[in-house]
Amino acid sequence: MTFPARRLRRMRRTPALRRLVAETTVTPDDLVAPLFVREDAAEPQPIGSLPGIVQHTQESLRTEVSELAALGISGVVLFGLPARKDALGSQAWNPDGVVQVALRNLRDDHGAEVAVIADLCLDEYTDHGHCGVVTDSGDIDNDATLELYQRVALAQAAAGADMVAPSGMMDGQVGAIRQALDRNGFEGLPIMAYSAKYASAEYGPFRDAVDVTIAGGGDRKGYQQDPANAREAMAEIELDIAEGADIVMVKPALAYLDVIAAARARFDLPLAAYHVSGEYAMLKAAAANGWIDGAATAVEHLTAIKRAGAGLILTYLAREFAETLQ
Image 1: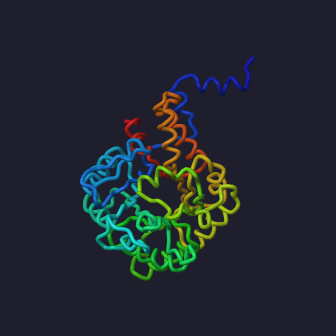
Image 2: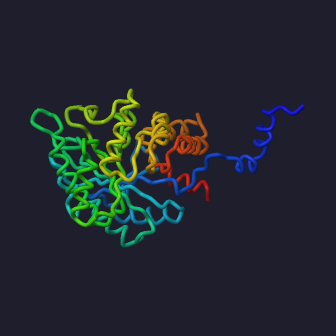
Image 3: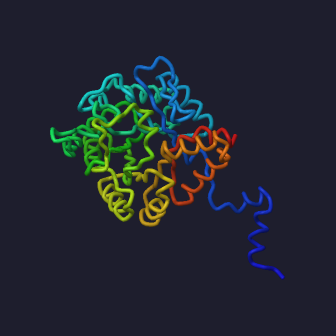
C-alpha cells in the first residue's frame, strides 16, 4: 500500500532531492549587509557584542564592500559614527560628514554595481541619543525633526546614495523626505521606510556598534511600535506607502514573522525585514557555547524570514552566508 505521507518522505531522501523541491531558497542577492563607518578610527574597531562585525575606517569599508560584491552581495546599508555630536545631530547632513564621504568613495569604486543605501536617522549624531529634536520637556518635536530629515536626505542624495532609509519612526517622515527629494531633482531616488519598527529589546548590540546611549536612561517607546500590536503595523505600512515609500520594512524579523507574513499578503510593494543585532548576537553566543550549529541555524533563520514573505533581508550574516555558499 502506498501512503500519501510516504510520497512526501521520498522527496526528502537525499540532499539533491530536497534541493529540487525546496519552496524557499535564500541567495546572496536577497541580502543587504549593514556596515558601520567611524570618522575618527585609525583602524577597524571590533564590536564585542557583534562578533565578526567592526566599526570600519573609510579605507577598510571600501575593502569590505569590494569583497562583499565579489561574494555576490549587491546591497549594503551604511551607519555613521561621527567624531562630534550635538543636540541636533548636525553632522548627519554635513556634506563632508562620515557617511557622505563613504557614499562618494563607494560610488567611485563601484558605480551602479552595488546598491549603497544610507540609513537616515539622527540618533548616531545626537548627544542625547534620540532620533530627533528633543524639547525642553523631554519630548520629541516631530515636525522640527522632519525638517532635519529633509536636510539629511538631500546630503545623502548629493553624495551618491542609491536609496535612503529613514529609520526614526517620525510621523510623516516618508512624505517629508519624498517632497524634499522631488523638489531638488532627486525624483528617481527610492525610499526604503522602516515602516513597522518595533521598540524591541533586541537592539542592544546595535547601540554598542554606533556608540549610542539614550540620555537619562530613556527609551523610544513613544515613537517606535509596541511589540504587542500587529494591526497597528499594517496601518503604519499603509501610511508610508501613501506618502511615497518604495520599499517597506519590518524590524526586527524573527519575533515578527507574523507581521512580515501579514504585510506580504496585504501589500504589493517590495518588503524588507531586518534581522537585527540581538538576533545575530544570540545566535553567535549559543554557537560559541556549542549549544547550536551556528551555520545551520543561520540558514534556518534567513530561510524563515524569506519564507514569511520578505524579499530582501538586512542581516549581519550576509558575508558569512555568502562565504558558506562558496
